[in-house]
Image (cartoon, rainbow, N blue to C red; front, side, top):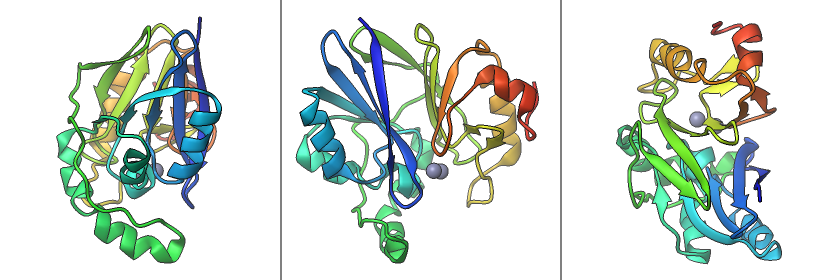
Length: 215
Ligand SMILES: [Zn+2]
Ligand SMILES: [Zn+2]
């Protein structure tokens, strides 16, 4: 019995949409469905997985732009992000229309089934994920941490030797660095971090080598 995952880069920004599944039940969740919903749905069907939920880290279009289309293909609950990202979801139709010239798919606005908060837990089969609120890149950014599997779905908070951009409306650099120090750098060094873009890393590697935030 094991937790499996596959990373599916989506949208022109190659956002790391991640499909996680429990190989005992074949129950699955998708994180950050930014786009490419039909392809992802095909992969889920080809592998005989039971998609149970969609989990969202934050409201940027490359992370949420495929949610409405995915829910048309299979109607599952959408969990997160934190309610402080409501302003982004309310602007999604505008944003995806504006970014069509960069190759983004249009998405109507939507609301999640449920907003998430610090300290909540989400379940996938036998696995429990803690919800941590890491504001700064966006005010309502959350991450998903599975302690038993030492896995962190980090969205655009912590990257390999980098951190999320904080030059957006309602971003806050100090909030981001504080939250990384106090909530992520306290996790075990061998926790694998799947960021929203590019390569995976570990907490230990970032504590030593991240030029923006050292332990
Ligand atoms: Zn983002
Ligand atoms: Zn992103």
